Every structure is written in structure tokens, then in C-alpha cells.
Length: 273
Image 1 (cartoon, helix red, strand yellow):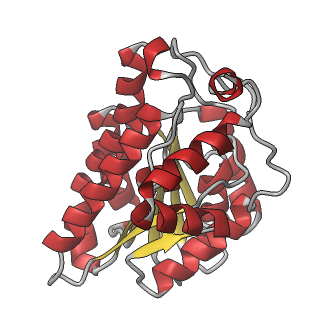
Image 2: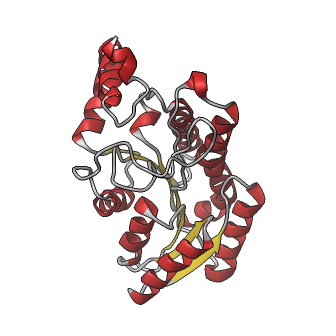
């Protein structure tokens, strides 16, 4: 990773922040972008203090012009781009029947179109370096999760998109990794949108026993070094993908019952009935 240029979207907290430190401590030059300038600058200061070369850029990945400008500014500063990590993402939590479709559109714009924009505009430079494109997806991209239909849809779309891009680039030397962390301790659940598009402001799961963002970032770093095509983390995540592939009807019941146990789950009432 020495002197590689790594662009990480959604890097102001959680896995994105942890990835910035993981790659930066290996000697890479780091470009971080996020919507919130204040938290982005705080991470910038932390990285600089750790002796990591960093460029921070405020951007909304759902806005094509913002993403294009981030790529242009990265090239203007470092004259190359080796690794793109599509990490920016948002979740949602509500039953479809209660959900304003605009909420799902917002989730798709950030999680899926943000990945499309960044990958498209970064691709010419990553082809030059025979570098890596990484998508931070989710187990929800393999198994649809109730009360998170929009989030699942966005991650299914990301997985299919990256698979197609990987195949297109098969003979170019470009590496494409789909990384699915499983449940990881981060702020994505706190920032999850409700049925009307408002951030819920609290997590509905006990995060004390989850994989830390730092541990997750370490696994992703090693997967990039080894140029793996897919990374599924946590025993629960691997088991979910396996059961869903081979015993889908059982997976329906197990996933339903597991998520019905979440705090204030709208599935609880139906379980009791």
C-alpha cells in the first residue's frame, strides 16, 4: 500500500473512518469524502496527527457533479488513483406499507447511484494503475431483510453492478471486491431513515457483541491486498448466505424471527399473533 492513493467515500465515521486509518497506516495516501464537513474535518485532523497524508473533500455521493469533482480533485492532488472504496451508505427501517417511496429513492441514490457515479468516473484512472474497486455491501445484498426493503434493494443492486463490472474488466488487470461486513458496530443504524425519511437517531440492535469497525477494516485491507473477489464477514453472515442459497424457505422464517426480536420491531405483533 506504500504511496498508493486510496479514495474512500462516506469516511467521516464507522467503517469508512476505520478504513482510512487501516490503509493510511500501511503508507497509502488517503482521500476521504462525506457530506458533513465538521465530522469530515475531525477525521482529517485525526489522520494528520497519525502521520497519514490525507485530502478531505465535502461531497454528497448521490449528486453526480459532486462525485465527478471529487475524482478530479484527487487526480489534481496526487496525479493517480489506485483504490476506490465505495463505502458511503444509508439504511432505512420501516414496513413497506408504511414507507414513503421517496425514502427508498433516497437510499438507492446514495447506496447504489453513489457507487455507480464514483466507479464510472474513477475507472479510467484505476485502469491505468490496474488498481482496485471495492464496494462495501451487506448481507442484505444477498438476503432481503424485512423492514429494510429499500436498503436490501440498494445492496442487491450494488452486488449485481459490481459483478457486471468485474466481468467487463476481466482482462484489464483491474480488481473488483464486493465486501459484506455483516452486522458491524457503526452509526449506520443510528442514521437509518424511518418511513418518512427522518433519521431514527438510535440503534435497534445490541452492538456490544458485534465486530468492530476497525476489525472489519482489517479484513477488507487484507482482501484488497490478496485481490479477493468477495468477502463475507461474521459467522452469522456466512450462515445466512448459505442457508438462503440452499434452504430459502427456512431462511424466510429464521430472518423474520431474528429481526422480530429487535427493539420496537413492527414484526413483533405478527409474531405474537
